[in-house]
Image (tube, rainbow, N blue to C red; front, top):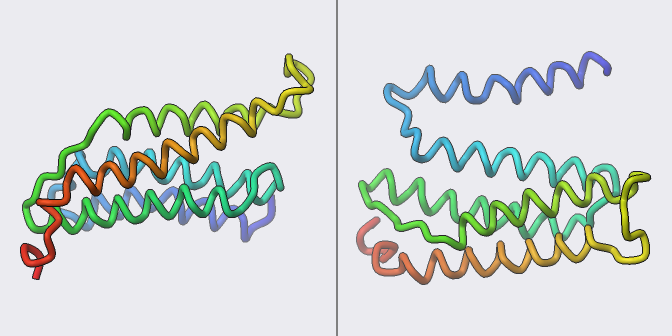
Length: 150
């Protein structure tokens, strides 16, 4: 690993430290899901860089995460509590399972080489991700009215 890559990794690892240092009392309820989203996003970007995943799939998933996280942060800054639902948890599990399947798809211990389980799982995770994003916005629509933020 060259020096530039080491510096990049160090900068990424310093992000949580800066969050804790520069916020008086970090809201751990917001930071916990943010950590999940950063981990998923990093894994997707790495899979794309290794040509193990289509970039558009990663883009859709990461875009959903950015949009929902942005909505939650704006709402939290206005003291609005948005309700999470089971689809968010199902989404996270499906993403972890799918990413793991893609990571191990070409290993010799893969049992069913003729069936692209990794691709099936990633598309299922993609569908659940998009659905959960729309469902989250739909369920929190009343709290998201723009006049409350403006």
